[in-house]
Length: 358
Image 1: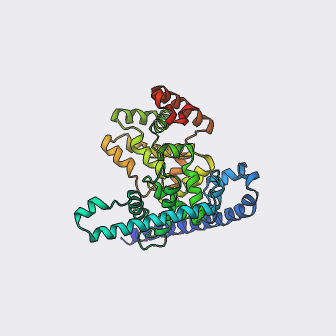
Image 2 (image 1 turned 90 degrees about the horizontal axis):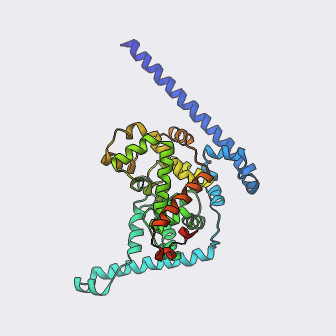
């Protein structure tokens, strides 16, 4: 028994030393990477953004202290949103919230008849307020009374005023929250609006069903190319991409993956674009393929809509590294599937979907 105890003590000591060495190595890497980003890359962004050295360093994840600056540069501001424009829509959002709260207060003091006849609360305000409190609950900073509760509401409310045609869609809160964790309020709003304006995100957040279908069909092509056995199993079980891919794309994995892992996915999304979202999805499926092959429809849907909380960042990104989807291939497959959808889509409604006519 003493010998067994000594061996266990030695193993524990070795594991502790290994963890300390790994931590020290990681800290040294972060310090060196931070210096490279601050002194070499960011001051020469336009010239160095696509350099091989930068892309390789980028793959390893951005140091947290430069993440917001890199994301801001990567997202850009094609919409030309200014501080003044944001202030206008933020004020509108705050006024809508105040009016909504006043209406509810009056409702509580009126009888039911007056409630049904005279007052209607703003459903968008209600939905945003409710979702803000559900965002990253383990952090506690976005819940009522937390330091970012009102800030997150203002960004989402301002966007719903800025783009009333889109308004607020569930999932947006996670996107805005991730941005706010890495940059100032105005920059978060600018990045958020420009992010939603990207083709894939616009298709999903505007609920453009033909284009959403084109993306799902395109994903199935890549799934067949990379994981044909799993694709066949999904087909046999009746599991279609919309049942799991929708939530992943709506939140850019920020709801499905641990926050630190999701942040690295965002890093590479900023580097590579929409094709990296497909690579991440395929990486997740490849990582759990042996388990997924044994599951039936209900278990599959449950597993993929609520991934394990202890996903290994190292294992996931090794799996993603095994998946190759070039931008050219991504665009080619998407174009082919869009044309298929175009043939099925009623010609008299094509004007509503200019993306499909391109």
